[in-house]
Image (cartoon, rainbow, N blue to C red; front, side, top):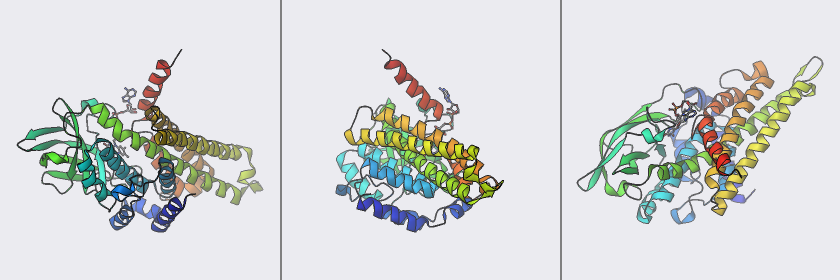
Length: 369
Ligand code: FAD
């Protein structure tokens, strides 16, 4: 493991310790910890040295994301949001905008990304949040839902309809007209700071519109989701690692019917399938990161594939881990119980499993000979 990555995972280990279960039950990660991790550049570790970031490769950032996900999916979710905000800025912003914003993100200011709305979930073309030119600035009006990390965020990257196209705009969470309402009792990733955010005529300078107004919505959404999907996929690898290890440890240490659980063939099947799931998800993520490093035209498809494979295997793998631990793993707050709830959400976010299947099916048809 490269030295900077080893140091980064050690920081995560030190900061998380054995507290992830308590954060999950409390529904909150201490914000000072998030700022600490953020100020070390580790919430968006692919940001390069020119902006003050660690400049990790996609692989190393993926490994950091997986490691974080193996410890705490809520923290990994906040990491994904910060990284997605940073990547959206890198992809869309003019150089002077990027120079102003990226250093803030690697100095510990926290960011979240809002695209979903009550009537625009899978179908983001139904988005109605508007950004309208007014004098020398813009006015933002609308409501985003389920924004991960929004209750911790200083900055929100918001997608809106604008001038016959769309725009991504950076909004200070403290701006007049912004209202953040915490999502009560999410079923998983409970400490990830999910919130609904309303924008009631929020006035913004023209410099806050990334790359200018009137861009194609699919371009904006694809920019954000490409990072979001690969990050969630690596997070799923982390869930699978944690589940495989917890299941294997338990199966080797508890005996029933006169021998260890790991000696019973039906339990062995669960362990084998967990190992396969972890390996397959890791390979799919590795391929997506290879495409990222190479700037391959296959990147978008590879991230959809990795996210779909990772999420499906994480949901099934977490279920298997709970089955192996049985009563020992079913108490709220236990790592595998938490993984079970967290993993299900991975099949919904950043393009649900069905939306991923639609994209993969379209590719299957388009490449048929
Ligand atoms: P719907 O779009 O209503 O879909 C309902 C069901 O119908 C799903 O199973 C879906 O797959 C299926 N479906 C829909 N259309 C089709 C179709 N054409 N063919 C087949 N099946 C279809 N949003 C943000 O903007 N930022 C965030 O940070 C963020 N974080 C989130 C974190 C969590 C934990 C959750 C639960 C959500 C988050 N979201 C976020 C919102 C998320 O992106 C949406 O929930 C997701 O896009 C699905 O939208 P929806 O919930 O409205 O479901």
